[in-house]
Image 1 (tube, rainbow, N blue to C red):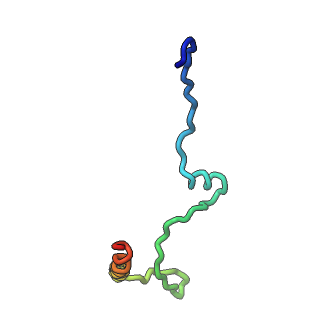
Image 2: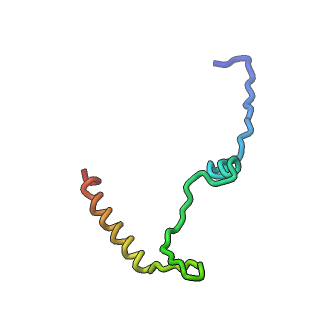
Image 3: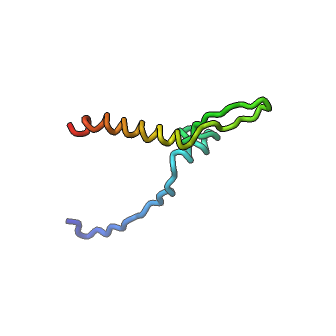
Amino acid sequence: MMTGRNFRAVLMQVPERELMGDILLRENDEPSLPVHVNIGKFLRTESGLYVDTEDREDAAKRRQIANAKERLRLNPIIDL
């Protein structure tokens, strides 16, 4: 019981929310966290230019098959 005392709440200033990636970029001048990059197959021509040679539909089908195999592999583990 607090008799005879007056208490007053003091609110502290809270800094604005920041992302760790933004802080690291500001400190190091280069991204320190992993960055998503698409991987493509390229062929260098005689003129020195690179041409994308990957068939996107084929790559999507291969990815779907790999995902389906991974789901089949994980089903017995998850059901334990």
